[in-house]
Image 1 (tube, rainbow, N blue to C red):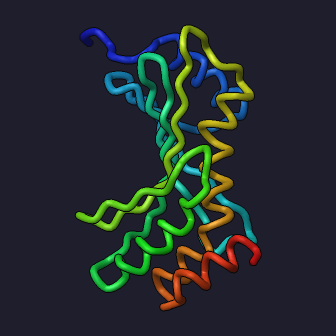
Image 2: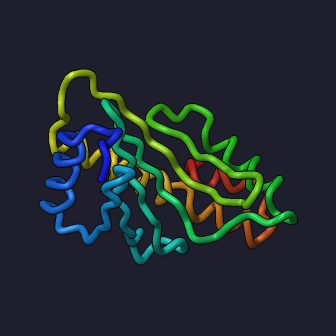
Length: 160
């Protein structure tokens, strides 16, 4: 294997955190990627998300993907829903890939000259994207499959 293009110390800290919470994961060492799935809970219509943690030189990006994609019939409504959800978010954002309809939540944090604590890593890599899908996931499904108006779905997700 050649030289890695990410922080080995940051990768090791992330590995320790995932091991401490007894997460089953895959690690793609050549790319600095941790990959695992998580359940959202019985009260959620969206049952599972896939989390990909990308390690950089001095940062971590965590993506939380769902296994459903917007198609040509639903993409406009899904994009409106995601845009409305993103307004005011501070720790990350939802993204939509117009080419294949993939929807994911992204959280990115930089760590200049330090390795974050285990609690920081849990918050950035797991809790933040998980909580966003728990808050907005049911509305996403209503817009994707149920023909619900994106504005109404957001109002419900945000408790208005």
